[in-house]
Amino acid sequence: MQLKGKRVIAIGEREGVPGPSLKALAESAGAEVVFAVTQCFV
Image 1 (cartoon, rainbow, N blue to C red):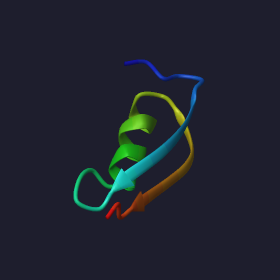
Image 2: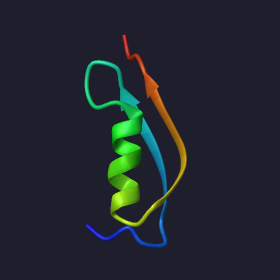
Image 3: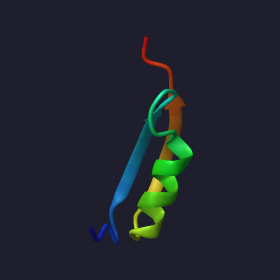
């Protein structure tokens, strides 16, 4: 997927995929990550 020129908000989940992993994935696809966080949804 090409995300070049797009801005991304990466919201990860503690028991699933964490925010920093989503951030790295989006950046590798060319996106600008403006916010990344890992939350705990209980």
